[in-house]
Image (cartoon, rainbow, N blue to C red; front, side, top):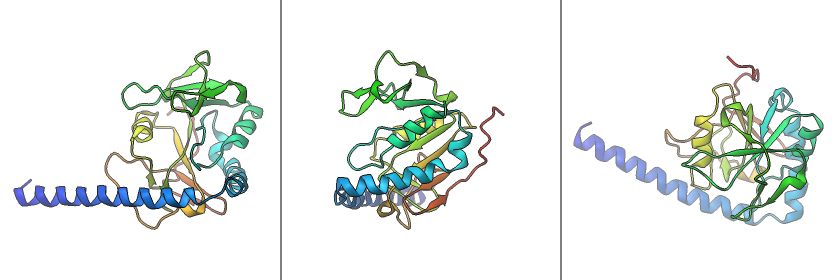
Length: 214
């Protein structure tokens, strides 16, 4: 790459980074404006819509998240998945490198506050290798209609999803206020197969939901 080309590329990257910072601030403010009652009410609708997707229905092993700071609740999904006899796992706060580790739980009582205050499985719960997870249910600050995602900036989910099996799929859960028209992305960012809100199910990558090993 020529000197001028490299400078232009670096400028574009810097502008993208600045836009992400600005977008995170904007979306964080939107989320803070939501009351607990609104989060619960809309969250029920998001979860019901998610449970109706073929991705959930076909998955055998589902990775959920414990919500923090206004993220879409996942308790109804947990209860349904356990009743449906799926393997349900959650990420741990102790990260080796950038890839999350997951442990399976058999009941909600097995989730306890971790070192970051986020509920996570106890150490006695079974470790589930990332490449054995069929479906990742992913939180985010913002999403686009075509499946792009903006996280909190740590990059842990992006790294984890890249390390997952090629047959795995990912669904982002969001409130309608978190949907934006455009979003700067880099090669490190991973798109969703679906984005589910309280009123819409939006196609991202929308890959096939056959989770059988290929």
